[in-house]
Image 1: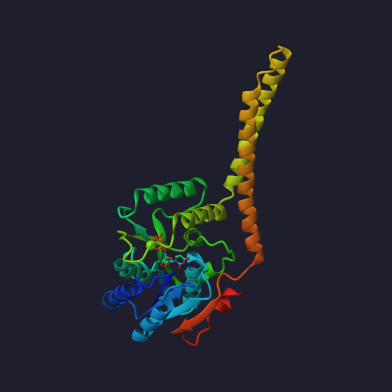
Image 2: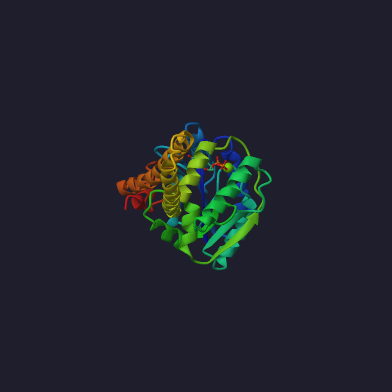
Length: 321
Ligand code: UDP
Ligand code: MG
């Protein structure tokens, strides 16, 4: 079995040496595979990540590199790597560069794959190393996704193994708004999970500040469910019912000659209705924006340079298709 490990990297020069050591160590001692490679996808880093990948590739024949022309984002970078790996490997493992995920469970993933599993999810046993806020917000996110009818694996990020046919099936998804952990779930095939303890980031800092994290959550929700639109309609209907009551009340008050002291109720309903209309517009705008970016069909990423590529066609060939 041939395996490629895809690692998206954005300004990760502080960790890549250690990551390479640990991955190679695991591959050379434990992994039940005939050949293994590590593909670093440099997602338009601004530090010395790309030259470092070059050095690592010169040192170790297993290391290859794909440099994207700009910062396409984690999900797009991962896609670029999967696309490159799809036709070159029997199984592809994706893992973050920062060593938060446990490299040690990859051999178990590979064994499951050899036994006929197409997708093996790496699932975090606990969130002990996260801040309380991240733990709470992540929990909320998974619950919300479930409530919205999207099937996501609890506490699974983008650490997973996919067989070649699963990756190829994924590559047939044409959408530009990528939320890979949800999309992979839709593929079907034989799936299983391995559990691990997540560590602290080895070095460097998180590339997902709060703003990006919220954006990612919103993308996940809106690209997997249209239920928020329905909720808005229900909210609108509820308001109309309330409005009916208010009208009856207002007319009765008018008839009774007590119509003047209405300032409070007018002010309250003005703000409340104004706010809900704006919220509703915002949610609809979010979906309209999604449709807009989908119809443009822009490439997901642009490849600038490849190190250690072989004669097989480049990653960008399929991307434009
Ligand atoms: N990453 C990327 N492009 C980006 C942001 C992040 O390729 O625009 C990579 C990053 O280098 C890392 C992975 O995505 O390998 C996950 O990022 P990070 O560990 O910073 O996120 P966190 O674990 O804090 O959620
Ligand atoms: Mg991380």
